[in-house]
Length: 457
Image (cartoon, rainbow, N blue to C red; front, side, top):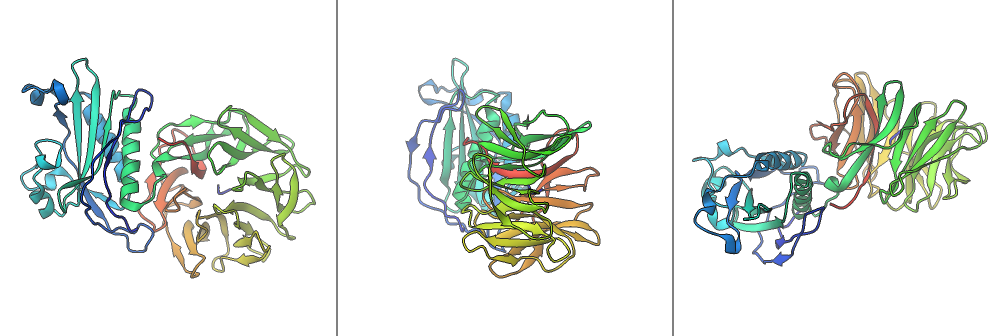
């Protein structure tokens, strides 16, 4: 159903094992550039970054005069494309093409001293990213990545990856992009996250997962029939969803470690919109007493108490990271609206007052913002409500219908489903309403995104 300012700091060079990938720490201290971007404020600024053409560089004792003439490996172009695609997902970055630089490529190498900073400054470039390929005599390849600030020409982030292969390059691009986001914003999580969603395969609807950039597409369920409403556990190790059986709804829990799916039934035979609480318990709409109420469900799959109860339909629970706030949809006042439950006091307050059809709420991890879908004369659109000041903002404008928003783990990005391309697919925007980007999910209709942690890169 619903599924910083930043300060440029010291660079750390490293080598960490990822498959055949190793990271060996080497530290250097650099004076700090100062740039300011508050991705959570209303006026986020753009940082201009340029990806300079990759270079072949000599390595240590293997250096000789012929190294500079070594051709780039075949993977160099593909990796540069992967890195550019990753950085394009960060809307606070503006990628400047090399053709915008007077005189073309201002670099003769990959170190700060190898780059003529002046033409970059003239083109208002804030950051320059260099890629160096070391080709060892045995054929092994090392990859050196640097992000250099044009304010004082110093490295703000540097990483060296050893024994790289074509298979590990996409993960290197993700890893470096994650480090860079952390440096620039103080936050990360985007490149380490995973989106669960429902994909229609023929007559069936099954649960899949994919990274926000469309990597690692994986089918989770193969149960046949209709499987709906996936949601992640806080640690990203489990997924809960609903299976519509021939006679009853089943609550299903997939375990990442084992790949197994537990299926549980409940009195009333209805399970709608299950979700995890931060403590590992669950909540879902059940019809135990004839009404559709939201119940707390413990780790033994036993309903313990009603969290939202009325004569009307109560659905779509979602929780902040503390578990103290629960948003949900209720028709207790006639039309569906969004409500907020204080889990400590039990007090319920109404969030939305505008519109006649508000559904699919998702609350940001910090508990401040609630995104939801509202029916408008032009179709369903995504809105965000600020619980602190009561303000409301429309984030999406179609075409088609925009529905089922889901906050990312950082509270900045929002995933949603949209029919703007003719059939429903998963898209990404931000809390500020940045232009939507489609997530590659393969063939078929894709709906009901749920955003959670995956694994550290």
